[in-house]
Image (cartoon, rainbow, N blue to C red):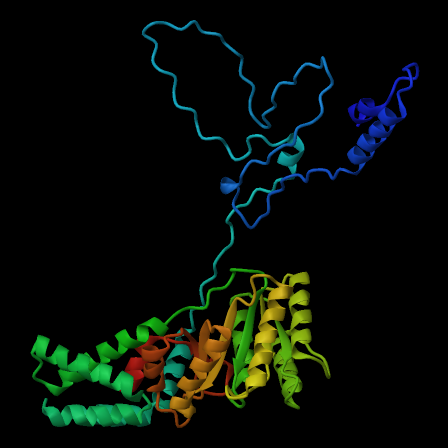
Length: 430
């Protein structure tokens, strides 16, 4: 600052210049005073330090006769300067080392720079209790018993001929597997029977199970926790699919991993939606952000802000049920997603669709429509304990392989469990 004023201050005993010279001096002083300062190059946590680019320091005015200061390298140990006389057989000087990422920064910049360390812990999904898992598997088999009996009954005392393949085709179509998945499985089964020279019907059943597992395996993916705080999850689905109930069960499921949860009552259309979610919140001792009347996007926006302020681990946002054909309501979902991104730039981290397994091939149409509108990251399949036939998962795996995080087989909290291709294939062909 001292040199700045010294540059433009005229000595008291200096002779007065001409009016033109005084006007030029005034313009120069005014431009210097209003010249914006060059912003300091600050590092943002979004980019790793090792890729940072050294800032360009603007040239500073230097007084005539002032010696040029020596360059300062922050945080570098000083080493004595030793002058060595070159010799004839001296080795060539080594290649210059890559410039460190902090080279050229001032001491004040160096102190402000945060050190970014990848210390985020990714928490795997919880391991279920063996007793509860056994009970849940029995419920899953009971729910899929109709499909299982129709499929397994075909192989009892059957011959490997064209009639067997026709009966399998009918059973798969009835189980809601769809034409595409059915043709894929039968074609692969025929090839496997020829390649392995299978002669027994039970061997064909085992081969069909292996093919079904391979088809469903891409849907088997765990919900990874700890990627962000909060981990924002947006729950969508059609009317009556079980969104609110699934949110309550999932909140209890996450608490087993010591995850703090906050819920947002974004379903502002259904009369009892807010009260139903509040009941689940009281049951699980979870805070619910809601408004008696208001815009769904505004409610969820406030919930994201509250979750960030309270250091909540997981924030789940409920949304109103809607059909994919209701274009104005689908546009509202896109608005909710945009508002969440404004509240937290990298959110929502998960966009889950809850589908009712009893709707058959209509569930596949829902998956396609919601995925095209929102970009789904996962599915929750509910009501597999009713009249569901189970083959819809094969159709989804064939045409839109979006991960199935959880499947539900009942109304109890423990009836919502992670999806396993092996367990599901056993329930269908056990």
